[in-house]
Amino acid sequence: MKNKDTVLFVVVALIVGLLVGVMVSKGKDKSSSAPSIAAPGGGAPVNAQQTIKMLENLVANDPQNRKAWVELGNNYFDSQMPAKSIEAYAKALELNPNDPNVLTDQGVMYRQLGWFDKAIENFTKANSLDPRHIQSLFNTGIVYRHDLQDYVKATEVWKRYLEINPTGETADRIREEIRLMEAQPVIPAGQMRMPPQVK
Image (cartoon, rainbow, N blue to C red):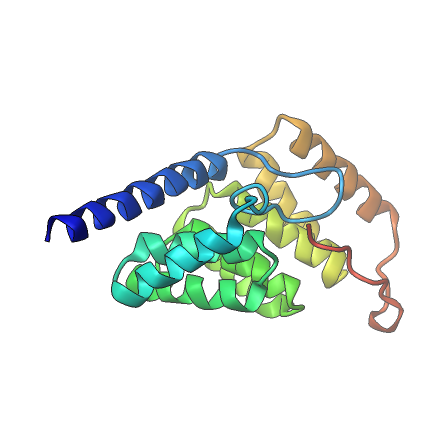
């Protein structure tokens, strides 16, 4: 029995360490010069497959472990496995549907699969839960601007972003994007350019 407790303690300690890294990264501005939506953990770790396997085993044995589902979704996210990431985040959202970070990360994965309406739905719900959740506003603007070519809605969303977060590199970039959109005519649906790649 003691061996079982020791193994459980080690697994929990590993999960807690991973979660702390993710929670710290959530609060940081992850935007870059490319119009992309950032990964929750900042990229796949070297031992991503081992971590994924460990988390898959953990949720198989404890399906009510919401933190493990979130971390599994984040690892699938970082490993460019959007369908699996969406599923893991869905399990976490079944246990708590009111998490703006999980909704936003799942929305990013919907965008990666080209499901732009689902992405917008997630980002909108995340922002309705937390009106100061700037990552969901930023991501909504990305989808409207680059995927749906809806400059009016992109401008509207990004102006809300600037009301909450008016300074910094991302705010400056958003102002420039708004200026460019206001200077461009609206592109008809049949002439849309290809959406930018998600990193």
